[in-house]
Amino acid sequence: MERMFKEFTLGKLKLANRFVFPPIKTGYGTPGGTVTDRQLNFYRRIAKNGPMPAEQPIPKPPAQNRKRPL
Image 1 (tube, rainbow, N blue to C red):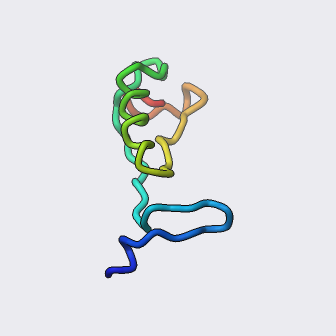
Image 2: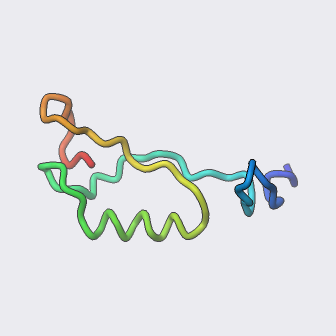
């Protein structure tokens, strides 16, 4: 378990530990799919700690199955 907290290198990328923020659905976008300041601020705070995946973008209205997609 100690290994999870130790700094390591992945290729040319140096990481502080082995934890990765998982992709989540924040619902912070507008109903039309526009990114909001709230959404950007959320990801800025999270990204300060290292790499992380973002929400799945939904490019076309037929694929929009939830309110406020990215």
